[in-house]
Amino acid sequence: MTNMLRSRATRRRARATNFIDISVVLHAGMVHWPGDPPVAMTRTSDIARGDSTTVSKLSMGSHTGTHMDAPLHFLRGGKGLDEMPLETTVGPARVIAIRHPHWITPDELRSHHIRRGERILLKTKNSTRCWRMDRFVEDFVYLSTEAARFLAARRVRTVGVDYLSVGGYRERNGVVVHRTLLGAGIWILEGLDLSRVRPGRYELICLPLRILASDGAPARAILRPISHVGRR
Ligand SMILES: [Zn+2]
Image (cartoon, helix red, strand yellow):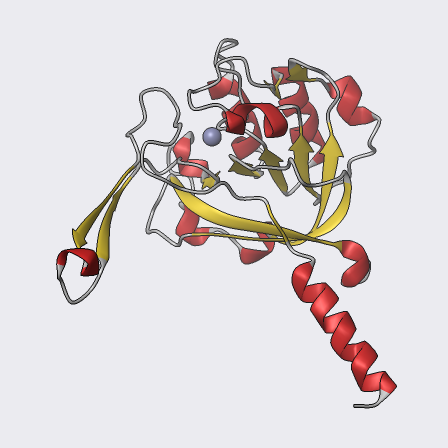
């Protein structure tokens, strides 16, 4: 192998191993939003029991783990996830570190010069705290209503958060935050684990399941540093 070919192969390997999985692992009994259906996975046939195949039955709410919200989750007549444009979640994205320990404020967002059409993933302390707990964390970091209005005014394309809702559980601003974002044409990605991601620019690849007229759907989401794919 020539040196040039060898270095190309090395670069390819570097690219291939550079993906960061930012989705949480789905499993039976996992944490879910209070009141939503529990997550159950049962084997309907199992090679270990002498069956010829192993097949499972999955049961979960449509907003389980890493998932997307469709406009119709909160807006009458809104689009379902089957109608989501693929560029919503495939393309350059920016991971922004949020310092505030309780909620996300417009002041903190303003300092990041967020632009129209951006895919913004907000990394809060949720990533290192909440996903390590076996129970639902009520006091997770959420978007203040004013921060949601700020993002809506900036006309971003997609907003991702690192726990199960963009709005607060105790604050009870989930309805207004969802309606503000979805009403502005912003798609919402929830339940990310950004604990292994440094703030910065990445290529986002995230595909929610294409379920007809779905209010939400589980998604696999991965990032890779933008330096490997070039700036766009
Ligand atoms: Zn939601």
